[in-house]
Length: 443
Image 1 (tube, rainbow, N blue to C red):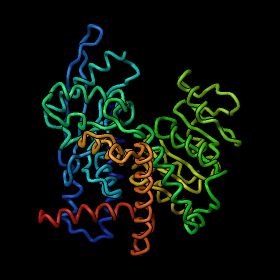
Image 2: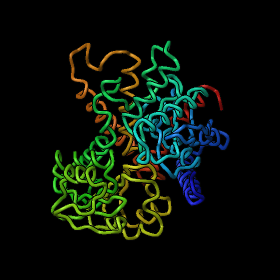
Image 3: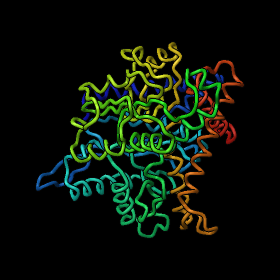
Image 4: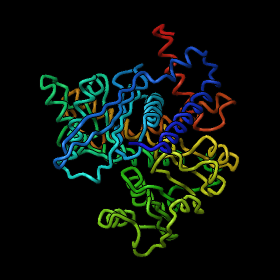
């Protein structure tokens, strides 16, 4: 079960999201009743279910939160982690609502979590747990291709999504669209090319667009293009690994530090990202990787002198206690909520630019939307006109990230009260949702 500490962190995380939304609502002069309707979490399901593991009964706890159903299905990943709580799930669900609105993906926001350390279970046992979790959610209507569609998040991936899809199909074999009940599936099980690396690829496209604007580079104290930019990456999981690899191998950036939970690697000449990941997979740690300096405290890497800092680990990583020590000129939120409101205020005082999470890590849900529509159409993308599916996915993602960035720029240009990209992103998202409520006469 989650600890009291973690519950406190989850509450603080949810409060952070609400503060960001309130800031946007103040700019838009949203009336109180409409504001309350937009911010409210529509529904939260908690499930507890027993599974026999190695002859012993274990009881597992999970959640699925639906923040908004202004558009359907509600969309958001499922997190597998030993320390997770309901407040955290609700905060993540809210972020999904605003993220989808910003990038014009026609979904509501949802999120799920299962209290588990997946590394502690054999594959067969883990599949039993995931199957039972799926049945618990689906029986209450919290997994369905038309209303609530999960995706992978921390601690799980394509394998687990295939298990969820299989469990759902067994429950509802007559559902022609059963494969659309979840996204992030393996390619040969209804997935789409480019989904695994989508969030990391989205970060790359976001940075490429940022570097197309000389005035934004100058404001951040940067110049030139991505080639040679010194980048620190926190978290070499799916998001951090793909973002770092693409930026290094395709754009010529230098990954000068990689921070993981057990320490950090530093090399001013650049780290070979693929080799570091291979070493991690083999040894379960970055400690001992050759041709790099190792530091015990990974938080120190966040204070390295660098051009770009990519936060791709957990929420609340930069806060009031350490924000003043950050020396990056540009921060990219690859994870959800890695900077607290207090930390952000300090960063802004130091003229550090932030690409906010609801923009920078939107690549996953954008490509999930492509996968979902592919599943509903029962046809591979590009089959009718002979275009390569991966090329279509990348082009669509690139266009989406470019459009969202320029929408934020336009919002800042048109409203003097908007001083940063995060506020711009939330103003755009909240305004779209508010218009939806008003057009239907709900408020």
